[in-house]
Image (cartoon, rainbow, N blue to C red; front, side, top):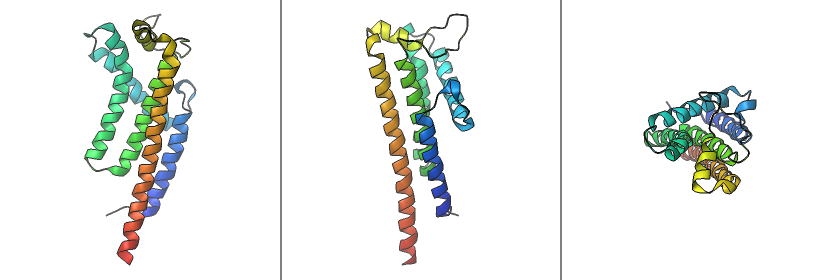
Length: 179
């Protein structure tokens, strides 16, 4: 049985709230349980990605965390689209946004290294400081990180527009049936 239109509208309002919350999200200062949970999954995937690819050269292992974090959310999005769970794809798209915003923030922090890092031992290496230093791109950290965050915002906006489109389509179909 299809869900009523009002439920989709409530869902879209929640997704708009989530978009705004993701835009201003900071893991170290968050009291949002939903985003903290999503971020915790991303963080776990980030760390596991380092471990899984330990045998590669160090520069790849360092980048693997953020790449894995974003890649995981993209796979979730792809799975929702493949199974035709289109409204769930809106949520998954926002999760991709969170991954991109997080990775971009981490990249932009490469020079200043202000973000608190978690890892084994007393000295934890900043992944993107290492990667950008090796590539000679350290002075471009904020540009690269800001660009990744901008892509995240675009993905989030497109996700919300897709959700609005789904509601408009449902509304159109329901009025077409009545006429």
